[in-house]
Length: 335
Image 1 (tube, rainbow, N blue to C red):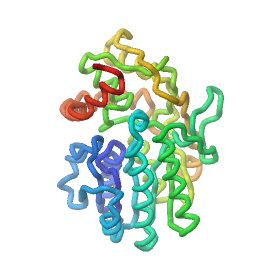
Image 2: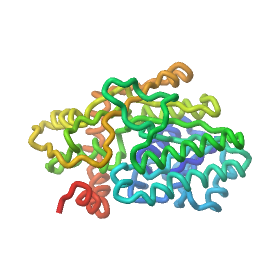
Image 3: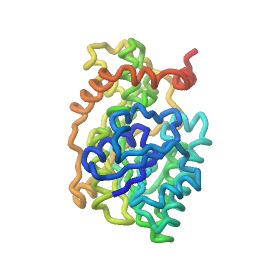
């Protein structure tokens, strides 16, 4: 099988490439990535000499390039996205270009190259925010995006569905909860906490820290996508969750405890605009239809994640330098 993976130098995409090449050594993988701030080829050093792996630097909005790559592809697995809510609040332009226009460019290429199989990786944030006692999101939950990021992902989901209904494009969509694990860019909550504590710095926590997320270890997510692209029903959406609803403040306290530090490192900062209070996923459909469920508990996954960051200090120090530091200072009002 020949797979075109977009955004394969990012967090989830690079984990998926490692997973696919490890499980299916005969598969051929092309990784299309623009190498924006979160794209990092260091994530893929272990596979760069694999004869079945090829990296192409390019933008998913590049019509000619995307068409050329789609022509000899069995399936497109679309990870590429601007994905951080905070950045979408500061400036949403790139989110519209990449997440909507880029997805449209890929869909057009898939359609015009003989209806190439297309899997679209999306987020639970398209569904909005849950109340404390509301049932978790599932495939029938109405869309209610509340940030420029989630609105752009919702638009891309609708485009993918439209190409199935209008053109018969063989698509599937997955909406996942919050991922964590190796190669996680340190602007996100868990790697930010871990790396700040390694540097003996305070950890910024929005508002009261009671925002709840459903945490999914990234390898479990890769296994779910594997199931969907091989056995999923065309035209269907699958929700992927980690079965781990935890408030942000508890995440912080868990990591502090594991690193032998106290709560004095917590620094509460002004909450971000429109901060969703709770996300949670009901993954019963993918469990019943495809036999997938998360295997890694949060207790196990967070220890594995801390250990990975401990062993890969140069990776995260490189990631936190330069442009990231400017963003970090602006986001958390640090001078």
